[in-house]
Length: 131
Image 1 (cartoon, rainbow, N blue to C red):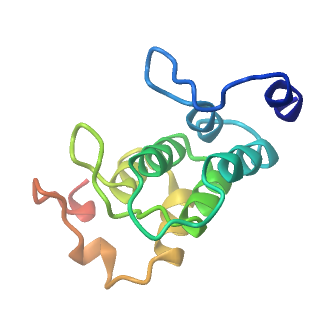
Image 2: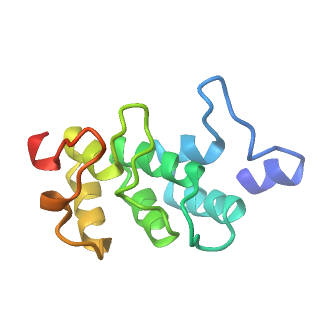
């Protein structure tokens, strides 16, 4: 369906009143194939720098427990320790606070950082253990 809509002029970069794109909506609960398709259209290559759009999408996927989207975003270069939401929380903190065990597991698995649970703080000095 997405391919057909795009073929006929649908704009995947359009944002709704919440400033969410099609990729954001798919991260909140879309199917894995549709998410993968939209991710590759929006970001054809894995990123080497922080993208606010990709980070926002990771936060959405973590808050909704969308493990497949979390996996794809992490592999595509999203940084789970980058704080970019209005509360200055990172994706790991969001997933932990909302008891989303599978996204937390994915973040810890993909992380190459020092122990994030013990060492990663946001600017408010809130540790994931404190949540």
